[in-house]
Length: 83
Ligand code: SF4
Ligand code: SF4
Image 1 (tube, helix red, strand yellow):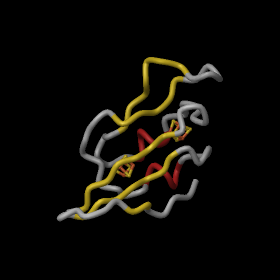
Image 2: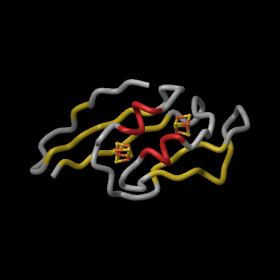
Image 3: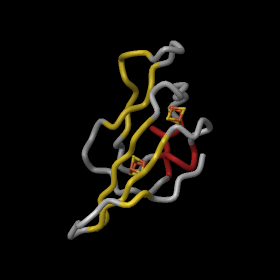
């Protein structure tokens, strides 16, 4: 089982929610706060990300970086990220 996590560029995010819809784990949600551009931004709301990169692929702003960590874990390596 691969575990993952995501880093979201909150000032780049435009709150389109595509990543939230694309996540099979329902790991993402929309913040109640807004960024400097006035958008609510996506954030990780559950610790169950599998590193599938669906969110990074679908994000039109290339705001998401996915990291994968195999088990047993020794180090975290960046996964492929496209937007
Ligand atoms: S990498 Fe996959 S499981 Fe993790 S937040 Fe993105 S869509 Fe969800
Ligand atoms: S797909 Fe990208 S721009 Fe849209 S809410 Fe997610 S992180 Fe923000």
